[in-house]
Length: 332
Ligand SMILES: *[C@@H]1O[C@H](CO)[C@@H](O)[C@H](O)[C@H]1NC(C)=O
Ligand SMILES: *[C@@H]1O[C@H](CO)[C@@H](O)[C@H](O)[C@H]1NC(C)=O
Image (cartoon, rainbow, N blue to C red; front, side, top):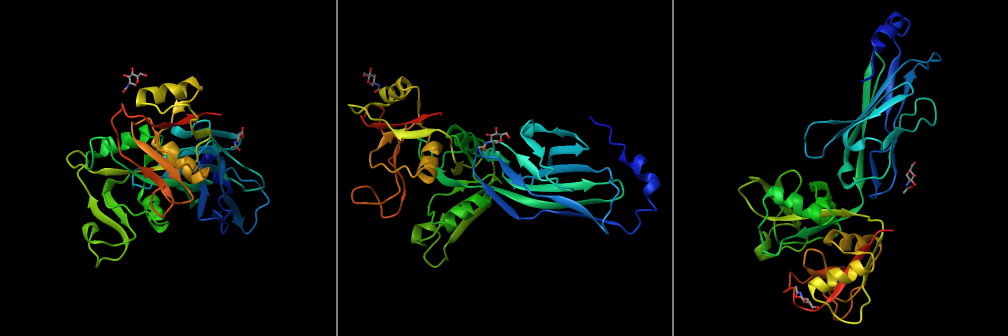
């Protein structure tokens, strides 16, 4: 740990600084970025009236999880020293472009970095802070396993999304997806332990025709004893996701091997959604994915390629002996 003995150092200046106020400002309220990119969360501090003498300050960035858990430390800086914590180790630093600039730069953004960030400046006399929200641009998709509908406890949901190169969606992410038209009549776990589902076209089996469109909630449910589907969230993924050109259709085992022979892997569901959303992958051929499901992505709806809306078409988990195409993922 550093020795933060700022108080001792500043004590003699107390009288001199009487009437001077510390201000901390974050410029934008919400910053939106994609997975894998570098992002700057703006923050600066200044004194009123203006101070010519430099004051020793301590800057602390912390993250407030969207699910109401405890704050986690991201970075603490004093003078030229800084220290980063946990998942942020080695991925964060202060920008320091100009006097009072303590903007936080996060590199190689991850799915779990979303949330509210607090920029706090402590100068021994005062402690001021301001917050900024970081959102990831991404895509929400409902997920259920081969065993069918309503088979996941909360923990299983978290794991299922991770296995698809995604995270369990937050309420805000599901809400944005609903605003963009997501309509799904099966209830799924969200990161805060609630179970909800998005309806844009009210109908009898999905809460009734008399209920307005919206995200319908079953509230917070028992994490071990209740079972639902899950909503996963996937963001931009670097690399190439493609339908494999292959002379024959393949069973599941052959499909996996065919991707590997190309130095690639059979694609995960989250990767296919990311490719559909961020690379406009459009292909009217059903292909195997790593979980044994069969899907294809449509950006430009057309005859014989599913419904009138763009989307990833899903055909469940066919018998692994069936012959189909395959989607592969290759890192670049
Ligand atoms: C992010 O920043 C790091 C280090 O500053 C740099 O090496 C990397 O290329 C940047 N990544 C992107 C996607 O700009
Ligand atoms: C797929 O086909 C191969 C022959 O190419 C066969 O050995 C294997 O048992 C089949 N696997 C499945 C899961 O059907």
